[in-house]
Length: 278
Image (cartoon, rainbow, N blue to C red; front, top):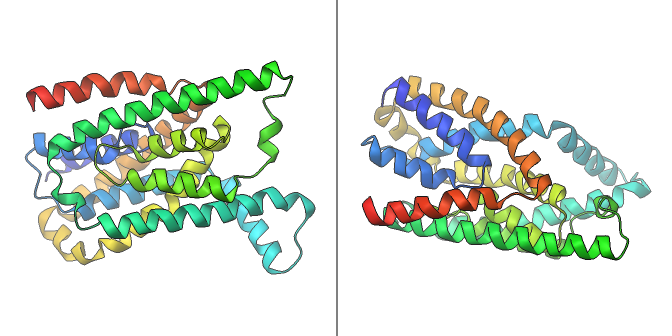
């Protein structure tokens, strides 16, 4: 792999990781087109780690706030206003647990999926985006008709059962072609979470998921040096980090506007073209 190819794959990862179009699916297609199919899965995980850095930077204030809540709870000095955040933390733990089960069960089979499955996964992701957006829009209209304010739900943390449901959705996002961010945001919307919280929770939930995927692939650490080389890995990670910051800021604005169907409109023709010609 050349440095230029590493940068291109990194840019693709940075954009596709946050936009709900499946980064793993797009990377697999790009690697096939570039004849880089022998690149170990750990390389993809390194790119995911780079985008993880983008998540931590973007949500640094929220992450620090949650860590402070945990610290006060451990010291038995919780404040009344910590209740919602403590509930969200429990939901994150439950969602991570469910995702971890999926990751362990599917870790040995993900690499063996036929590339045709990726295009089927694009259709599944598109359906989730359409359905999740439509469900939230109907719920929003009901709230407005009842005289409720849009901001009322934001003071309420993510409930444990909602965390389990979102973790289940993220577990399906392990499969190539099914977007992790798309499935978790849509899953959150279907579980009754408001749009802004859905986007935020999706990416907070990605932190332990990405770290877990990295640990599962550590056996390939020696292989990546010979198959890829240090320079393409570093160049790809830098590109993924920079592109990730940009894509994350764009997606959060789109989620707030309730326009996830834009990505579904992109994924459906891409899936059709892939099944017909690739």
